[in-house]
Image 1 (tube, helix red, strand yellow):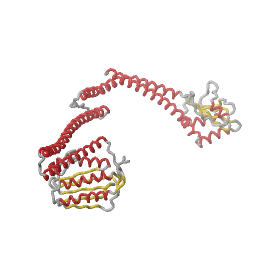
Image 2 (tube, helix red, strand yellow; image 1 turned 30 degrees about the vertical axis):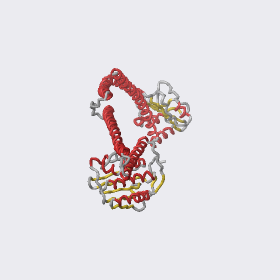
Image 3 (cartoon, helix red, strand yellow; image 1 turned 90 degrees about the vertical axis):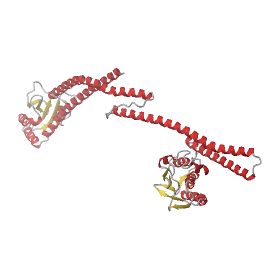
Length: 480
């Protein structure tokens, strides 16, 4: 594995070095050629567009004096880059292209290039051929009795020399770069393999269930990011396993709670039923009292089973809601009126206060009223007789809200995060006496969440509890 990684990195880096040098060579040689070509024609354009030069050369041509024309070109030779070797100028016949004068005397007749042909036709010959071995410019000049051509040619010898020098430098740099890249690639491979080997070792331990080994790598490169990601993944896996263990523990506690909740009424029903069966001569009033206890305990078991079925349907995602637009304020008032007599029977000060203009909301009216009923019933249940219970409702943040505040027994701080757990009760004895199952708030929370809302609770032990529900006006995003 290590040799393979070493080999791959070395080959890749060598390939990159060679490719970069080749690309650099191509661009440099093209750049040099482009620079010389552009510089040649820019220099020519600058000089020949000069009004003084044009006047002087035209005056010499009018006298039909090619030697004088050559002298004028010599004056501007520095600006034209004339060096007598690679770049020269000539005065040619405008009829035949024959050499008449120039910076040097050609050994043989000057070749008729495409630009000269163009100038012989009376047009400026200034076309550049990148593939040609020269650069030239031919400009027709009208004379007195004859026409002339000012011809400047560069054989690109300087450009070729510079290109060859650049290529030599590139190949020398390539050789040195290849040697350096071998050492660097080996060092890089070793630098990369070490943390990968550590990650592999740690991954094997995680696969075996050991989450204690964390890979130490504080670098900010990709390997460092991978290392930290692996450590985070290991922590998450450990947390997930802990959650699974807690879930298993909660499942066992849930089964135990269900068994306990059902065993208590079943035991009572059985005890009273056995007593009735064993004593046929029991007084009628006692028999009726025993039968009422049996009925009440049966209703309690039915309520527990119904609540458990509701929660299981929530867990399975199979419970259905009927979302329609309805008046939230009306539902709050209906719940208030439904429990008002019960609250007054306990001597509670029971009030309702609503803000004006509470908008209608989209939701399941029956389920929302079930939540509100549970909130108010809990307040009545856990507030001593003669207490205060206040219901308030309004609109805030794009949703309707309703709060139920009491001055009841309150909830200890350490238990407040458990109030929505299944079978949690603030006062177990009072709950059982009133038929509570400890599942109401769990169901209420499921309903509120399904509506896209939230339910919050604030409480202080011995001073009371405030529970608030908020529901969006437009309903949940996935409402049908």
